[in-house]
Image 1 (tube, rainbow, N blue to C red):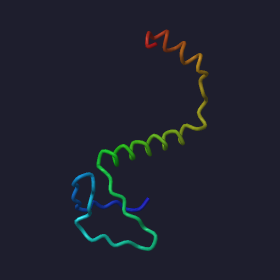
Image 2 (spheres, rainbow, N blue to C red):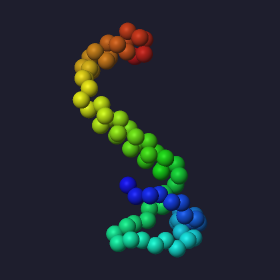
Image 3 (spheres, rainbow, N blue to C red):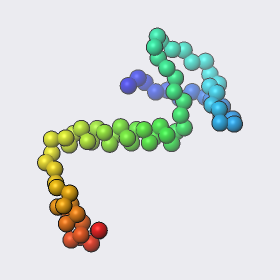
Length: 75
């Protein structure tokens, strides 16, 4: 993942326009998104990293999960 640097932009009528000149190296692209969407993306990436770290952990059958939840009055 490349470095992320904020740029000034104007939002009007559903259109985002950069207010600064943005220079690119060959093949680089500019993505403008709302901060909320960016933060959600970071959370998704964190979730994926946790899944990858846990891929070799033993699994629990769904029936057992349901039984545990019912025993704890959570289901």
